[in-house]
Length: 216
Image (cartoon, rainbow, N blue to C red; front, top):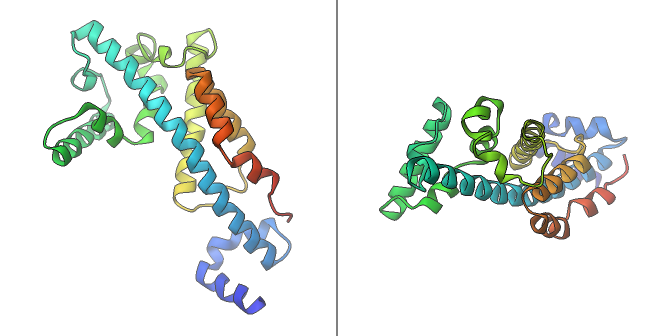
């Protein structure tokens, strides 16, 4: 078994295993923690995927209502006041949607936009342009003060977006406060819909994995 562990350590590289070796007391336990990290990453992707889909659909709904009320068009793509990077991301998503289906389909454009796009829409830069007139309604069960709500939503989406990226790129997440991440996700979903929060809490495997974390 030791020979197998040594070969795996070479294949995985010492640099990749460094944080696991520092967190444990033996190479074998480091490998066990690495395996646990893989499973935790899968669970994190599962949970953040739920957040991404529910949040983006809620934001899309409110942007459509905002555009309809202001421009008499439910398609907000031509009216939303995005910064340069947001405009580039939206243009690319629209182009991919049109190339894949032969025409621009609203739902396909939404699906083409990454988690980062939606996370940045709740940043302070869009406070007066989007949050105050529209996006605070995507999280109706959040803090009653809409400025406090913006800060809290922003914080949670920032953390969950970072977690998603770390997990997707096979980076260590074992040092994170994953229980806080779990609670952030469930709380944020509850601000959109208690039903979504209840479903995610019953679906995610993250709490069980945290309870089964290997000893150092």
